[in-house]
Length: 117
Image 1 (cartoon, one colour):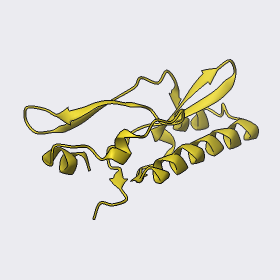
Image 2: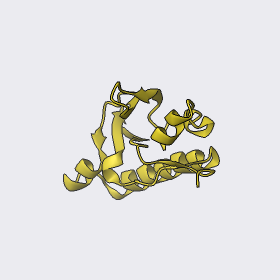
Image 3: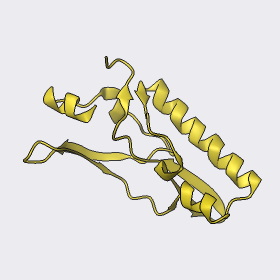
């Protein structure tokens, strides 16, 4: 997606509008001198959901709350015209804010704008 939009000199307006507490912010995007696309996302001080699952660190209530928040973030992205296309536990970082898990969806590298062919 990014390569296609960089070729035209713009990023999808929908992708840039992904300002939601459950989605890591896009700080910059572009192409290297070799033409390789890159994204610069906010730093999330947390662990991948996949790690928390593997270590057995989530009780049912916390797991349900994390899934609810991730669904809310993805619904927001969809409303902005962006489909993640690679949602999985390793693409969700979970920070701990005073004992409360706060997930952020990361890695929109293969995302697709709904209006893309």
